[in-house]
Image (cartoon, rainbow, N blue to C red; front, top):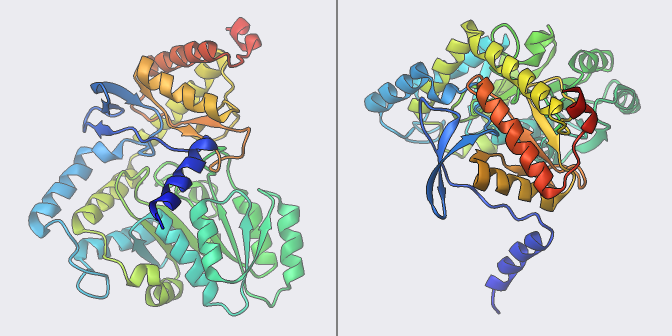
Length: 409
């Protein structure tokens, strides 16, 4: 038996379905974001990254870089063990305290990634409540879906942001049954916002716990960068707030914050926490420096919102099909998998612009798109260059432009 046939077949099927992913080898240059070096087949080339989740450019902030270098020089590179066995380093403990303070909770718990914090946090919390029913928004991230699956509990999926549907499911479950409502604040593919206040109202009315994923909002919304729930004055009403250190904070790792009892229970029971090596102290110190900076500085948030708004306006005026969104995410609809991939290939090869295509299964078939994420460092000239390049590619591929918008411009 040729076992390799199985794996070649698995890859070939993705290629046949136009779902095979090709990675671009990039070299970010500290102090020059969003410019980077693309190691192309023909050799190194300068490109502008337009799809990074380092939303505020904190990955190159001098205080963050300095904290990482100083701590690595003093404590070494690795954590030295799991949290239970010598890996609970002092910078990690300080980071968890900083996160608890950020979200106004009693305690925080750090995981190796935002994916793991969702996958492990949701499954562990639900498992600890007998006969728990999980109610999950239909557009929740894959990490949340996996957490729900691994819980092994009954689940109900409510239509995205449909509060009537959610209430019907809560009523049917009854007040005495443990219930966990899991949802996001910013849905990263469409760029829309979860109905946090309404979900909290229903959860309180029907005696359910709430678990929110703020990964695309922490650092960027609210007076101290705690997310949409802070911005909207709902943070104190949510039982568990999950976030990431790898996006707006520019580092690595994920976390949950909640009451001391919930955090201690997860810490004590979660296999995804217990049996993995802790985050290295240098990463923890860098993340703490980033959080502390963004707690007091709104400059980055304001700059990012301004450039996101300008990008939406400029691209729309150029006739490009910008999907409506109230957040920093700027989706541009292509609607065809092959043309979406061709668009990004042409942008990279001919214009030095890197945007990753978003195709199925990340988004439904027929809604393939570019997901653009302007940062404070994408200046007006870069936005104008992006619009010009996109229009050129759109015309070359025969993609439709909004002629009304072009005429108005």
